[in-house]
Length: 431
DNA sequence: TCTGGGGTCCTAGGACCC
DNA sequence: TCTGGGGTCCTAGGACCC
Image (cartoon, rainbow, N blue to C red; front, side):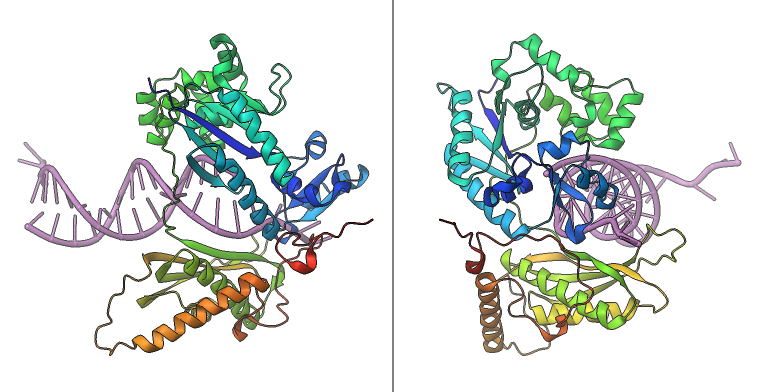
């Protein structure tokens, strides 16, 4: 068998921890960070978890509970979290030649040829270094596959029967101890098993990670699909899910938001989708691709009982793949014009880019003289736009179609400063 | 009575992840 | 009053072709 080992390093309560780095008053108290539009709790401090606040719960359902316990509620500050993530990943990446940045707060490392190393100790060094250099607490799980590293990472958090202190290497546990732990993990908590499959598995008598590990991969593949088969094999130590060091090119780019209030006016929708189109265009240029098609969609609020529902979408194709903000804005507006109906109240809108090609793969347009000089100037203009907005803050330069007042935009009632990315938001020490 | 069959491409829907 | 946003993969089934 291979001597490879995988580590999963993740930030504890990541968004809350990012906030705590810059505001010590948040220590020791229940803290939650809300999703966009201040809708749901997407990050919780340990104290908030201890109050029984579940992941993803709508804020209005827990407002009173938090008030009673002097909890702190923050709007999400993705500018800050993305920058802290970048720093954290850079530190983690120094500990293995092979790193996959899996999400904003999770990174896999692969150790090949490290058999003479004490990787548990290595994990402790990662934890210490990240804490020292970024202020962020992380957990480290080590195992022979990514799925097992994930399970080990769970165990690295607090567990009454296992003293792991933030680092857990499955290889340090005697086999019976491992099985004992697997038997305690709900099958739905295994990476790759969501709520639907968990229910279906339980109906088949498979309740724990251990049950799944011992299940027959062939027959479960027939009842489910190949993804679950891989999960079972990974639980048994056979790596089936590769490490992805370089993220593959995006296949689609979505930019959408719920509105702060229900929107009736077509002009507001036009402004909103223009803004989302500009955001999508910037992401598109960042990924060095051009798009051939855009889908524009609107949506009413399906949570309101009795509210008339309407969820239309319009597709726009581009004769030549493009990454030009002006072209995308124009397309988004034309899409809204096609599907807008005045009798509804809209809650959400968005644009989706698809059918993407790498930039530079330039297909000449039939029946049109190529205007290379014009295109050259255009792409310099867009590069300048991106550079300016990157340095001075998103939205510093924008197209008039995106609007000035933006009355439709989302709520962010408790936003903290962009401590690490804006000069005027630098934390100031007091003597 | 009985109505080909195999291959490819595309799409929609359903599941998962954070 | 108030319910996030952004992704990926797999499969089944239909369209189409020969």
